[in-house]
Length: 109
Image (cartoon, rainbow, N blue to C red; front, side, top):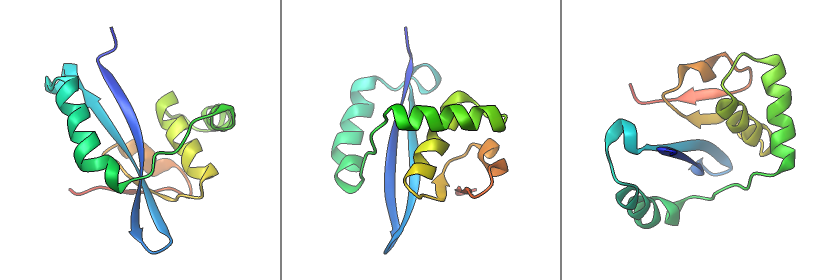
C-alpha cells in the first residue's frame, strides 16, 4: 500500500518569476489521514497555484537527469519539470537539490 503522494505546484514569487514546490503528504510519517490532506490542498492551496502536467517529455528528461546526476528518481522528475518549464527555484527541504546546476533551493530554516 502506498502511504504517500506528491503534488507539483507552481508558485508566483514576483511578476514573471516562479518557484516550483512539491507537497509531500505522508500518512505513514505524519499520521495525517489523506482526507484531511486532500481537503487542505483543495481549499487552501489549489486556488492559488498551477499544477503542471507530467508526460513522456518529462519522463525522458528525468531519465537524462538520472544518468548525469546522483539524485533520486522523484527528484529527477521534479528537476525535469522545472527545466522544461524554465523554472529555476524550488521550495524544498531536500538539500540534495543544492547540487543541481541552475536550480536554486529555497527553504525557511
